[in-house]
Length: 423
Image (cartoon, rainbow, N blue to C red; front, side, top):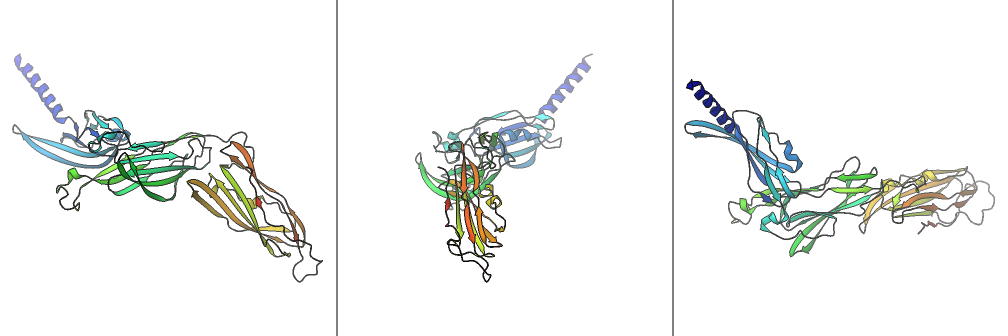
């Protein structure tokens, strides 16, 4: 009667031993780091079952920058025990108390681990985050990002300038900066990177500044993942020579730093914007010039109208083709050249421009009157509709050269003028 009981106990102990052997363990090489730094996660389990661990739960708070795997065999009390190991290099996506979640591997789960991501963790430094005039800051005392928007509450289809600054007081290698847009909020880099230096909390930082153009395609709350910096940074703790060779053999470690998310509260086109055009801008200028600006113009000869339209807060591609707005009397035809579009930063402000030559040719002599051209736009500073006007013109065209003609009129083409924009 006792034997079955002993057998049952042995079977239970054997099952417990198998379960313990198959358990997944997880360890971190440290439990406190600075934003952008990396931490090593080691996963181990019994090698008797195949497959790979499910790393998907890590993606919420971490990026996996690298991995390596291996196996080991140990003899314990005459029994062989095989282990599989997976080394993961992780970097946090944000600061705070983060949890490395339980990870499944072969039907077993590892225990959760806690990681503290704080500014004071880098290199034993302590103190507050370096200050900035930017709207959002993310990073450590040695490497951090700042972001700022020129208008946090823009109108739909307006042009928003995002300024990203990378501050570093350590040497970075193979560094890159990325910001990805989406269908609601496309992103485009504008201009070239600018490099300066500044003193902050007793540290001299190199500052790399980059500007991006954001164009909200719908109203409401729109957001983007923040900019991401990837680089290699010197790691003296992994240098086997202790810098004895002047840095030639310096070891590096990966760094990935996530900036804070970008969020816009986008306003819809207001009901008061009743004009045919929707041009949300801070300022609009419309200028004209005529060539020739004086002298006789004969039938069959071109009279060139040069138009320049500029808008602060819009791109050149957003400006309308005014050649299509000209209303010409019979006998006068327009031949527009290809428009030249420009988008530039002037004193940190986005300015879009559209320049175009339009040749006007009269088929017969006579007196021609061109009506005003009106362009409505929305003043985002004063929140009201305004209008730019291209004044009408009177043209007196002489007979073609060599043709019988009446005496020329006293004046041919009216002097050129600039179309004023309401203040």
